[in-house]
Length: 143
Image 1 (cartoon, helix red, strand yellow):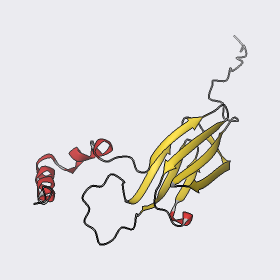
Image 2 (cartoon, one colour):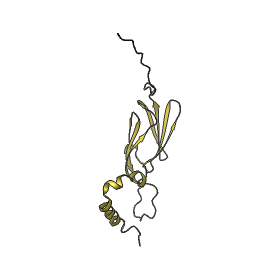
Image 3 (cartoon, rainbow, N blue to C red):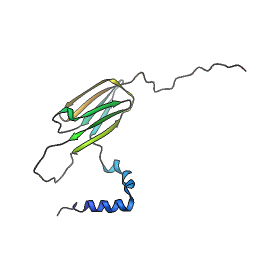
Image 4 (cartoon, rainbow, N blue to C red):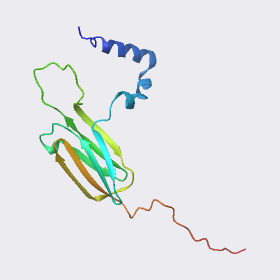
């Protein structure tokens, strides 16, 4: 007997009792971040390594850079057919994730490659963007 057979009924009852907005607060805890990402930095660059298995065509991945974030969309499909899923730890399905970056990055200087199930994205810090305050010289006005 599958212990999850009536899981959908249970969730519907909880939705009626608590309301859908209650569950929205837990989405980040209950739903893992897909795809998984590691972010590294050096003085002038940022390296993002994104775990996306099962990609047969890199055109399946949509990758965009914005000032302080990397947006990645796509679909993970391991292509297993004719089997019943017993255990699933490798997330499958469509994903749409915004990855917050530690600093503003340049949009004109980005490189990315897909290798062995990982997307390697090299970004460069926007050094023109001054994170520190800029002193303003105050002039003496008339009395």
